[in-house]
Length: 110
Image (cartoon, rainbow, N blue to C red):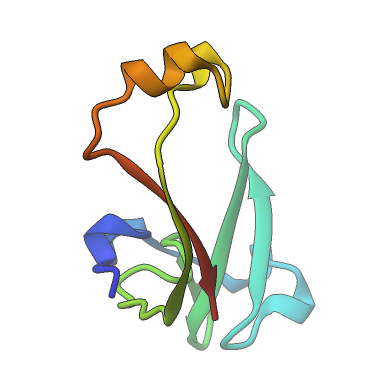
């Protein structure tokens, strides 16, 4: 299980903005619509429309997975002693540099 704070965070109530509906594209004036825009400095931003009123639309700029708890089924496929990358994957120096209790895992995620 991955908690929200370790994944996409929790829902930030300050990430909602109510705007005049007429400034949004006509096809986005419905609940569930997704919008893409740009900040003043050109950075892409994304929002979801969770509520539409008579003359306004509420935009949610939180990540769509914010506050979700994620569960993964994993199967450990292989366990091997970790190798320090700066020494090269299979070098003698790498084997000597890595403490014996550090491991890397190969896993399959469903």
